[in-house]
Each structure stands twice: as C-alpha cells, then as structure tokens.
Amino acid sequence: MTRASCPSCRLRFTPAATAILTSCPECGRPLEAASSAETLGYQLFGSLQPDAVLPAAEEVALLPPGDRPEPQRG
Picture 1 (cartoon, rainbow, N blue to C red):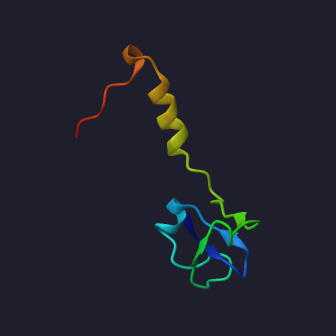
Picture 2 (picture 1 turned 90 degrees about the horizontal axis):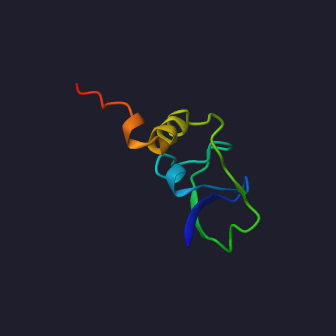
C-alpha cells in the first residue's frame, strides 16, 4: 500500500489528509509517495482540531428509528 509521507519530518498521512494536503504542514515540503514498509516508524499526522460533526452524526445514526429527528427540507 502506498501512502503520502514527509521523510524529513518522519510523518505519514491518512488518505483523507492527502486528499486536501499537497505539502507537509510541519515543514512545507511536498509530500512523497512511499510504501508502508518505508514509512514504518513514522508518526501518523493527526488534525489538531477534532471534527465536531462526526460525533453528532454517530449519535443520530444510533437512535432508534422513532426517535430520529425529521430531516430539514430547504
């Protein structure tokens, strides 16, 4: 499996992160494609701000069908 990484910072990035990143957020260098073996030991880069939408979506998805809020129609 190939994933994006920054060898100078020893960071690897998730596919979701590489969809929006073209350069390393730490040093600004372009990301490089590397195999999983080449990135062994690299730290996984995580967002500093947690996504608040996902937990709310999970809560609604776990509600029984009768307790779910009606979808808003615009």
